[in-house]
Image 1 (spheres, rainbow, N blue to C red):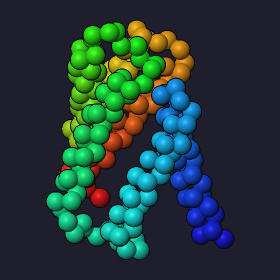
Image 2: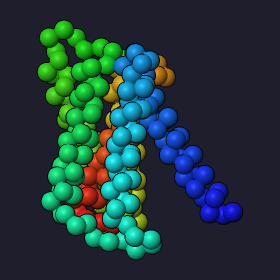
Image 3: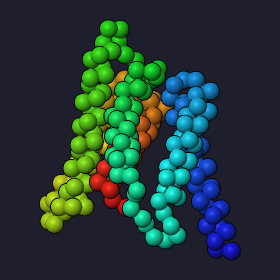
Length: 190
């Protein structure tokens, strides 16, 4: 009975993840894009689950058979993490881009995305790897707070609605998950 409930919860979490991920389609202003985003996240999630299932046997983790494939996937995911905010700024309507300032806006977005990722990486390094002293741990938490302020502070200048600020944090969450996934694939950690 415990095994059945475990499977039911796994399937429920999978379905919930796909449904929540598909809500990113609302940022485009076209409700039909929710279906496209849902299909995209479904395909990506199924591909990841397929790779994991082929690499894992029962409760033993096996090393990947093709390290080049892992590195290529890590690079693709890293590029996607960096490109996602640029795509949202370029193709969505909830961030108004002034006429003739597209390149400048995309440049600023790229710099802020890199700063966001660097602050989070430094915080994780201080907390998980280096964190021997209280000062290092406090600094790590302060870096997380500073990184968390960036998306909302930037978005507040353009769109102060709940949907606007919530959407930018949703994008930030996806960016940080993609970046972390890329890192773990690159350094071959299981």
